[in-house]
Structure formats: structure tokens, C-alpha cells
Length: 113
Image 1 (cartoon, rainbow, N blue to C red):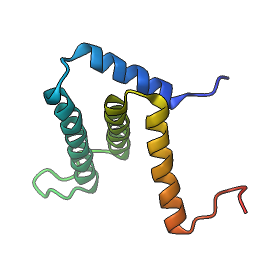
Image 2: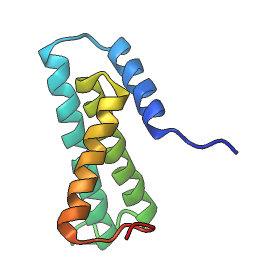
Image 3: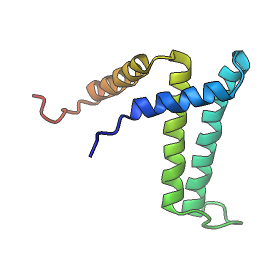
């Protein structure tokens, strides 16, 4: 079994989006707005899972929520890749952010003493 290269796939998806859409400030804004749209869909799925809307009750399952959260993550990474246009830079930004959270939280990384 081969190891999955998430960042290579994100780079490929972003290149496909970049080649399918016009370039410029409007497209840049669309990448950020698409992330907000996906986040809204995740919020709606959570409301549907919990039955928070008394008129609609439970309308979603946990699988729906998890798929929407995956959409948010992929869309965020593709937006980052769109702006960096460099898989290594995108990876470095994400790694730096994760490392900062790990350090601030006091989490001890597995295998690191």
C-alpha cells in the first residue's frame, strides 16, 4: 500500500480549480468565500444532527456532519495552496500552525521527550 500524500492531492485539486476559473482578485475572494460557504454547511449539519431547529427537528446524521467538516478542511487547504502556489509553503504554514498549538497546549508529542 502506498502512503497518501495529502498535499500533492491538494496541489492537484487547486491546479484544477485554478485552470477552471478566471484569475484575479475576484477569484481570490471566491476562494475565501467558498470556505465560508462550506463552514456554513457544516454548521447547518450540526444543527441538523442535534435537532436544534424545532420546526425541522433532526435532519442530518453524524456522517453528514463529518463529510461537511472534511469539505471545510479541504477547501481551507486549497485556498491556502491557491495563495501560496507552492506545496512546500502550504505544508510549512500548516505545520507551523500545528506546532504552535502543540507548544501552547503543553501536549507532549509521541516519541518526543
